[in-house]
Length: 235
Image (cartoon, rainbow, N blue to C red; front, side, top):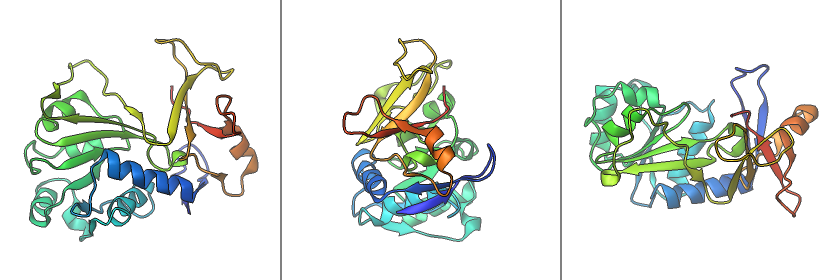
């Protein structure tokens, strides 16, 4: 479907080859989990050099919704962005938690779906924004077609305790996650392990880097059909 180069923060940039199957699974999850319909208006904010841009494009175009594109200056977090969301009737937008944190609570319309991704979400953001909006915490490396898990917070579900970690949620459709030890065996609850992701969203590998692909994309011992899973490196 496409190749997306990582930022190279852990070394030389890697070209992640994402499949059509992964893109299709992502679009279905967006429609079902995020309630995207032909009447939705999705704001396109991310640079095309990041996989979040493909996330936004699919959310708008593959669901039949309207994809709203504007000048970069209007997309800076703050009053200008809040005004744009209100004026255009935006129903869905994706932001890093740090960007939402600088916006005054209440500056985005009631009922807006806000997807937080790219970094850890704090309990304070959930308490401030989930009361009258649909707030989603999304997690996923580029190698899992942008998003592997989601957790949603809305309305009267109750605030998080100040010291509680915001969960990354449950796997999106067609995806499985495992917390494993160094022998690829499941760890007991409360024991630290590495997160592995398997299913439709797992990428084909790294373009032109067979050895690195073999080290990060490994055989899935829980899949009798010969599937693979991705080692995220997250504990």
